[in-house]
Image 1 (spheres, rainbow over the protein chains, first blue to last red):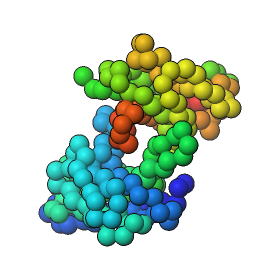
Image 2: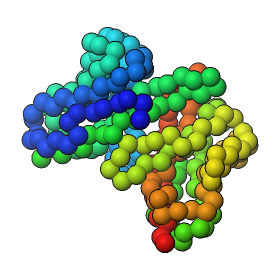
Image 3: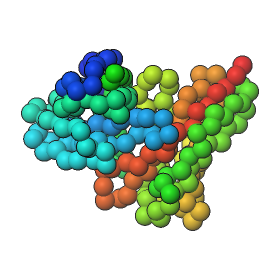
Length: 114
Length: 111
């Protein structure tokens, strides 16, 4: 499972409140990603990181921010949650092996914004 | 038009059947192709990884890439109820780590 954990695994919150999701990895991977998964849209990239304090936006970054102060932790923050941010959030890491570079996913966080 | 198209299903087959799952794509520059399996309420797990055109086999699974038609397939032989899941195709260009995903096909294998 590439040593990825996400917390919390489930969260219910109210519109307008801040929410932070945590991704933790144990294998010192440089590249980390946050995705959201919604019916009919598949997996969409929110933000990604190439190392400590090196982050950038993905295709659906509006309303989200990230931070990476340690290699092992990648935090996703919804500054003021909206109902449109109700989704399942996945963290991923990128692993490079000879002839193969692809992404491995965490177990996900289910977020409901009321 | 989406860059990667995938029929959402559900696809329902009896145990033992051969299953064919497919994705089409629009950008001929994609070089790496992947299939992920996602069980209900779990994260996607990498199933198959292929580079450029051709076939790759791993047990009951065969991944096929036809770059001339911009079409990739995943075949599952002797399907089992444990294969019931959503299958996501993904692909990327050679000069980036970013993956583009299909929306997934839900497969149900009944005993």
